[in-house]
Length: 320
Image (cartoon, one colour):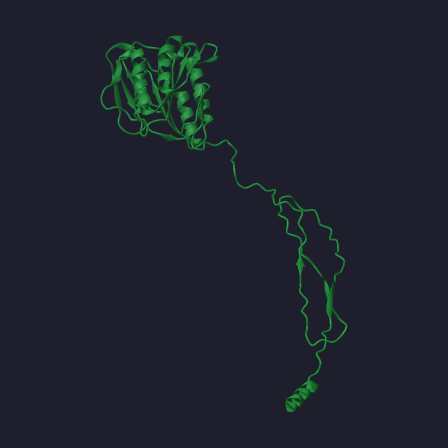
Protein backbone atom coordinates (compact mmCIF):
# COMPACT_ATOMS: atom_id res chain seq x y z
CA UNK A 1 0.00 0.00 0.00
CA UNK A 2 2.93 2.30 0.87
CA UNK A 3 4.54 1.50 -2.48
CA UNK A 4 1.33 2.32 -4.37
CA UNK A 5 1.03 5.60 -2.53
CA UNK A 6 4.57 6.60 -3.51
CA UNK A 7 3.92 5.82 -7.17
CA UNK A 8 0.78 7.99 -7.24
CA UNK A 9 2.69 10.82 -5.55
CA UNK A 10 5.39 10.72 -8.22
CA UNK A 11 2.73 10.78 -11.02
CA UNK A 12 1.01 13.79 -9.51
CA UNK A 13 4.33 15.69 -9.23
CA UNK A 14 5.17 15.14 -12.97
CA UNK A 15 1.81 16.28 -14.46
CA UNK A 16 1.68 20.02 -15.44
CA UNK A 17 -1.44 21.90 -14.52
CA UNK A 18 -3.68 22.69 -17.55
CA UNK A 19 -3.46 26.26 -18.81
CA UNK A 20 -6.60 28.20 -19.34
CA UNK A 21 -7.08 29.06 -23.04
CA UNK A 22 -6.68 32.65 -24.07
CA UNK A 23 -9.69 34.39 -25.62
CA UNK A 24 -9.23 35.25 -29.26
CA UNK A 25 -11.50 37.82 -30.89
CA UNK A 26 -11.71 39.56 -34.27
CA UNK A 27 -13.69 42.37 -35.76
CA UNK A 28 -14.27 43.57 -39.29
CA UNK A 29 -13.59 47.14 -40.16
CA UNK A 30 -15.28 48.23 -43.40
CA UNK A 31 -14.70 51.35 -45.36
CA UNK A 32 -17.64 53.71 -45.84
CA UNK A 33 -19.58 52.81 -48.96
CA UNK A 34 -18.89 55.17 -51.82
CA UNK A 35 -21.95 56.56 -53.57
CA UNK A 36 -21.79 56.03 -57.30
CA UNK A 37 -23.77 58.35 -59.53
CA UNK A 38 -25.76 56.20 -61.92
CA UNK A 39 -25.83 57.65 -65.45
CA UNK A 40 -29.12 57.93 -67.31
CA UNK A 41 -29.69 55.23 -69.89
CA UNK A 42 -32.16 54.61 -72.71
CA UNK A 43 -35.35 52.88 -71.65
CA UNK A 44 -34.94 50.20 -74.27
CA UNK A 45 -31.62 48.99 -72.78
CA UNK A 46 -31.85 46.38 -70.05
CA UNK A 47 -30.19 47.53 -66.87
CA UNK A 48 -27.31 45.52 -65.36
CA UNK A 49 -27.51 44.54 -61.68
CA UNK A 50 -25.62 46.74 -59.22
CA UNK A 51 -22.12 45.62 -58.20
CA UNK A 52 -21.96 43.78 -54.81
CA UNK A 53 -20.77 45.63 -51.76
CA UNK A 54 -18.55 43.83 -49.21
CA UNK A 55 -16.20 44.52 -46.35
CA UNK A 56 -12.96 45.96 -47.69
CA UNK A 57 -10.60 44.99 -44.80
CA UNK A 58 -10.37 42.40 -42.04
CA UNK A 59 -8.21 42.44 -38.85
CA UNK A 60 -7.24 39.72 -36.40
CA UNK A 61 -6.86 40.93 -32.80
CA UNK A 62 -5.61 38.81 -29.90
CA UNK A 63 -4.19 39.61 -26.46
CA UNK A 64 -1.88 36.57 -26.43
CA UNK A 65 -0.14 34.37 -28.94
CA UNK A 66 -2.12 31.35 -30.00
CA UNK A 67 -0.90 28.26 -31.82
CA UNK A 68 -4.24 28.01 -33.65
CA UNK A 69 -5.20 30.34 -36.53
CA UNK A 70 -8.83 31.32 -36.81
CA UNK A 71 -9.95 31.96 -40.45
CA UNK A 72 -11.78 35.15 -41.22
CA UNK A 73 -14.93 34.39 -43.22
CA UNK A 74 -15.80 36.54 -46.24
CA UNK A 75 -19.45 37.51 -46.15
CA UNK A 76 -20.79 39.05 -49.38
CA UNK A 77 -23.86 41.19 -48.98
CA UNK A 78 -25.32 42.42 -52.26
CA UNK A 79 -27.12 45.70 -52.52
CA UNK A 80 -30.87 45.39 -52.76
CA UNK A 81 -31.92 46.33 -56.29
CA UNK A 82 -34.70 48.85 -56.59
CA UNK A 83 -35.34 47.97 -60.25
CA UNK A 84 -38.65 46.31 -61.06
CA UNK A 85 -38.35 43.23 -63.25
CA UNK A 86 -40.42 44.58 -66.13
CA UNK A 87 -38.74 45.48 -69.42
CA UNK A 88 -39.62 48.43 -71.60
CA UNK A 89 -39.36 46.65 -74.95
CA UNK A 90 -42.16 45.06 -76.96
CA UNK A 91 -41.59 41.78 -78.73
CA UNK A 92 -42.57 40.96 -82.29
CA UNK A 93 -46.35 40.84 -82.45
CA UNK A 94 -49.07 42.40 -84.54
CA UNK A 95 -48.73 43.51 -88.13
CA UNK A 96 -50.14 46.73 -89.55
CA UNK A 97 -53.62 45.25 -90.09
CA UNK A 98 -53.68 45.97 -93.80
CA UNK A 99 -52.94 42.51 -95.13
CA UNK A 100 -55.28 39.57 -95.83
CA UNK A 101 -54.26 37.16 -93.17
CA UNK A 102 -56.27 34.09 -94.05
CA UNK A 103 -58.58 36.11 -96.04
CA UNK A 104 -58.46 38.39 -98.91
CA UNK A 105 -59.94 41.89 -99.30
CA UNK A 106 -62.18 43.37 -102.01
CA UNK A 107 -65.04 45.81 -102.52
CA UNK A 108 -67.59 46.24 -105.30
CA UNK A 109 -70.45 48.79 -105.28
CA UNK A 110 -70.01 49.11 -101.51
CA UNK A 111 -70.07 45.36 -100.89
CA UNK A 112 -67.01 43.89 -99.21
CA UNK A 113 -65.50 40.42 -99.04
CA UNK A 114 -62.50 38.85 -97.31
CA UNK A 115 -62.41 35.82 -99.62
CA UNK A 116 -59.16 34.65 -101.17
CA UNK A 117 -60.93 33.42 -104.32
CA UNK A 118 -63.68 35.49 -105.85
CA UNK A 119 -65.29 35.66 -109.28
CA UNK A 120 -66.92 38.60 -111.05
CA UNK A 121 -69.94 37.86 -113.24
CA UNK A 122 -70.63 41.14 -115.04
CA UNK A 123 -73.39 42.16 -117.47
CA UNK A 124 -72.02 43.40 -120.82
CA UNK A 125 -75.35 43.37 -122.63
CA UNK A 126 -76.34 46.12 -125.11
CA UNK A 127 -78.91 47.52 -122.65
CA UNK A 128 -76.01 48.71 -120.48
CA UNK A 129 -75.64 51.69 -122.84
CA UNK A 130 -78.83 53.20 -121.40
CA UNK A 131 -78.23 56.09 -119.00
CA UNK A 132 -74.49 55.48 -119.05
CA UNK A 133 -74.79 52.28 -117.02
CA UNK A 134 -71.77 50.69 -118.66
CA UNK A 135 -69.61 53.69 -117.75
CA UNK A 136 -70.66 53.41 -114.11
CA UNK A 137 -69.91 49.69 -114.20
CA UNK A 138 -66.51 50.06 -115.87
CA UNK A 139 -65.43 52.73 -113.40
CA UNK A 140 -66.52 50.72 -110.36
CA UNK A 141 -64.97 47.48 -111.62
CA UNK A 142 -61.65 49.22 -112.42
CA UNK A 143 -61.65 50.74 -108.94
CA UNK A 144 -62.37 47.36 -107.37
CA UNK A 145 -59.36 45.84 -109.14
CA UNK A 146 -57.12 48.75 -108.14
CA UNK A 147 -57.92 48.32 -104.44
CA UNK A 148 -57.09 44.62 -104.31
CA UNK A 149 -53.97 43.42 -102.57
CA UNK A 150 -51.47 41.33 -104.50
CA UNK A 151 -51.97 37.58 -104.22
CA UNK A 152 -55.77 37.51 -104.39
CA UNK A 153 -57.17 34.90 -106.81
CA UNK A 154 -59.90 36.20 -109.10
CA UNK A 155 -61.97 35.02 -112.06
CA UNK A 156 -63.82 37.37 -114.40
CA UNK A 157 -66.74 36.37 -116.60
CA UNK A 158 -68.73 38.69 -118.88
CA UNK A 159 -72.15 37.90 -120.30
CA UNK A 160 -74.97 39.11 -122.47
CA UNK A 161 -76.62 36.38 -124.58
CA UNK A 162 -73.42 34.28 -124.62
CA UNK A 163 -70.97 34.17 -121.72
CA UNK A 164 -67.18 34.42 -122.00
CA UNK A 165 -63.97 34.92 -120.05
CA UNK A 166 -62.78 38.53 -119.79
CA UNK A 167 -60.27 39.15 -122.59
CA UNK A 168 -61.93 36.86 -125.15
CA UNK A 169 -63.23 38.28 -128.42
CA UNK A 170 -66.94 37.82 -129.19
CA UNK A 171 -68.19 37.59 -132.78
CA UNK A 172 -71.98 37.81 -133.23
CA UNK A 173 -73.54 36.21 -136.32
CA UNK A 174 -76.93 37.76 -137.20
CA UNK A 175 -77.88 37.80 -133.49
CA UNK A 176 -78.48 34.06 -133.68
CA UNK A 177 -75.02 32.68 -133.12
CA UNK A 178 -71.87 33.78 -131.35
CA UNK A 179 -68.26 32.60 -131.51
CA UNK A 180 -66.00 33.13 -128.48
CA UNK A 181 -62.36 33.45 -129.48
CA UNK A 182 -59.92 33.22 -126.53
CA UNK A 183 -56.33 34.55 -126.89
CA UNK A 184 -55.16 30.92 -126.75
CA UNK A 185 -56.91 27.65 -127.42
CA UNK A 186 -60.01 26.62 -129.32
CA UNK A 187 -63.17 28.63 -129.97
CA UNK A 188 -66.50 28.16 -128.22
CA UNK A 189 -69.90 28.53 -129.88
CA UNK A 190 -73.25 29.79 -128.63
CA UNK A 191 -76.64 30.01 -130.29
CA UNK A 192 -80.17 31.12 -129.45
CA UNK A 193 -83.45 29.38 -130.10
CA UNK A 194 -85.69 31.99 -128.53
CA UNK A 195 -84.47 35.54 -128.96
CA UNK A 196 -82.46 37.49 -126.38
CA UNK A 197 -83.25 35.09 -123.51
CA UNK A 198 -82.81 31.76 -125.33
CA UNK A 199 -79.02 31.53 -125.53
CA UNK A 200 -77.15 28.33 -124.63
CA UNK A 201 -73.73 26.76 -125.37
CA UNK A 202 -73.47 24.97 -128.71
CA UNK A 203 -70.87 22.33 -127.88
CA UNK A 204 -68.28 22.05 -125.08
CA UNK A 205 -68.55 24.54 -122.24
CA UNK A 206 -65.75 27.00 -121.61
CA UNK A 207 -63.75 26.80 -118.36
CA UNK A 208 -62.88 30.06 -116.62
CA UNK A 209 -59.32 30.31 -115.23
CA UNK A 210 -58.03 31.82 -111.99
CA UNK A 211 -55.70 34.81 -112.13
CA UNK A 212 -53.45 36.05 -109.34
CA UNK A 213 -53.67 39.75 -108.68
CA UNK A 214 -50.47 41.75 -109.17
CA UNK A 215 -49.65 45.20 -110.54
CA UNK A 216 -49.30 43.98 -114.14
CA UNK A 217 -52.42 41.82 -113.89
CA UNK A 218 -54.49 44.72 -112.57
CA UNK A 219 -53.46 46.94 -115.49
CA UNK A 220 -54.22 44.15 -117.98
CA UNK A 221 -57.70 43.54 -116.55
CA UNK A 222 -58.51 47.25 -116.29
CA UNK A 223 -57.70 47.61 -119.99
CA UNK A 224 -60.03 44.68 -120.78
CA UNK A 225 -62.82 46.12 -118.61
CA UNK A 226 -62.69 49.47 -120.39
CA UNK A 227 -62.31 48.17 -123.95
CA UNK A 228 -64.71 45.20 -124.07
CA UNK A 229 -67.71 45.91 -126.32
CA UNK A 230 -71.33 45.34 -125.33
CA UNK A 231 -73.13 42.36 -126.89
CA UNK A 232 -76.78 41.62 -127.67
CA UNK A 233 -78.92 39.38 -125.42
CA UNK A 234 -79.59 38.84 -121.71
CA UNK A 235 -79.38 35.51 -119.95
CA UNK A 236 -77.52 35.19 -116.68
CA UNK A 237 -77.76 31.71 -115.20
CA UNK A 238 -75.19 30.34 -117.67
CA UNK A 239 -72.37 32.69 -116.55
CA UNK A 240 -73.10 32.03 -112.86
CA UNK A 241 -72.86 28.29 -113.49
CA UNK A 242 -69.65 29.00 -115.38
CA UNK A 243 -68.27 30.67 -112.22
CA UNK A 244 -69.41 27.78 -110.02
CA UNK A 245 -67.66 25.33 -112.39
CA UNK A 246 -64.26 26.92 -111.71
CA UNK A 247 -61.66 24.66 -110.07
CA UNK A 248 -61.46 25.16 -107.17
CA UNK A 249 -64.83 26.93 -106.90
CA UNK A 250 -64.93 30.57 -105.79
CA UNK A 251 -65.68 31.48 -102.20
CA UNK A 252 -67.56 34.62 -103.26
CA UNK A 253 -69.20 35.77 -106.50
CA UNK A 254 -69.97 39.40 -107.36
CA UNK A 255 -72.92 39.24 -109.76
CA UNK A 256 -74.08 42.45 -111.47
CA UNK A 257 -76.85 42.91 -114.04
CA UNK A 258 -78.91 45.84 -115.29
CA UNK A 259 -82.12 43.87 -115.77
CA UNK A 260 -84.30 40.84 -115.43
CA UNK A 261 -85.24 38.45 -118.20
CA UNK A 262 -87.89 35.88 -119.02
CA UNK A 263 -87.23 32.87 -116.81
CA UNK A 264 -85.07 34.75 -114.29
CA UNK A 265 -87.19 33.61 -111.30
CA UNK A 266 -86.41 29.99 -112.22
CA UNK A 267 -82.73 30.84 -112.76
CA UNK A 268 -82.52 32.45 -109.30
CA UNK A 269 -83.78 29.29 -107.59
CA UNK A 270 -81.52 27.09 -109.74
CA UNK A 271 -78.23 28.90 -109.11
CA UNK A 272 -79.16 29.75 -105.52
CA UNK A 273 -79.62 26.09 -104.56
CA UNK A 274 -76.40 25.02 -106.26
CA UNK A 275 -74.31 27.80 -104.73
CA UNK A 276 -75.75 27.17 -101.26
CA UNK A 277 -74.90 23.48 -101.51
CA UNK A 278 -71.33 24.38 -102.52
CA UNK A 279 -70.97 27.00 -99.78
CA UNK A 280 -70.46 29.84 -102.28
CA UNK A 281 -71.71 33.33 -101.33
CA UNK A 282 -73.25 35.41 -104.13
CA UNK A 283 -73.39 39.18 -103.68
CA UNK A 284 -75.79 40.78 -106.18
CA UNK A 285 -75.99 44.27 -107.67
CA UNK A 286 -79.03 45.52 -109.60
CA UNK A 287 -77.89 48.45 -111.72
CA UNK A 288 -80.76 50.89 -112.39
CA UNK A 289 -83.36 48.18 -112.86
CA UNK A 290 -85.80 47.66 -109.94
CA UNK A 291 -87.49 44.72 -111.70
CA UNK A 292 -84.39 42.61 -111.07
CA UNK A 293 -84.72 43.15 -107.31
CA UNK A 294 -86.90 40.13 -106.47
CA UNK A 295 -84.79 37.52 -108.30
CA UNK A 296 -81.46 38.90 -107.08
CA UNK A 297 -82.78 39.07 -103.54
CA UNK A 298 -83.64 35.37 -103.78
CA UNK A 299 -80.07 34.51 -104.78
CA UNK A 300 -78.54 36.68 -102.06
CA UNK A 301 -80.79 35.29 -99.32
CA UNK A 302 -80.23 31.66 -100.33
CA UNK A 303 -76.44 31.99 -100.34
CA UNK A 304 -75.93 34.39 -97.43
CA UNK A 305 -74.91 37.25 -99.72
CA UNK A 306 -75.89 40.90 -100.08
CA UNK A 307 -78.10 42.79 -102.52
CA UNK A 308 -77.37 46.36 -103.51
CA UNK A 309 -79.66 48.52 -105.66
CA UNK A 310 -78.05 51.33 -107.65
CA UNK A 311 -80.39 54.03 -108.98
CA UNK A 312 -80.01 56.47 -111.89
CA UNK A 313 -78.18 58.98 -109.67
CA UNK A 314 -75.63 56.39 -108.65
CA UNK A 315 -77.03 56.23 -105.12
CA UNK A 316 -76.67 52.82 -103.50
CA UNK A 317 -79.17 51.08 -101.28
CA UNK A 318 -78.35 47.84 -99.50
CA UNK A 319 -81.37 45.55 -99.28
CA UNK A 320 -81.52 43.56 -96.05
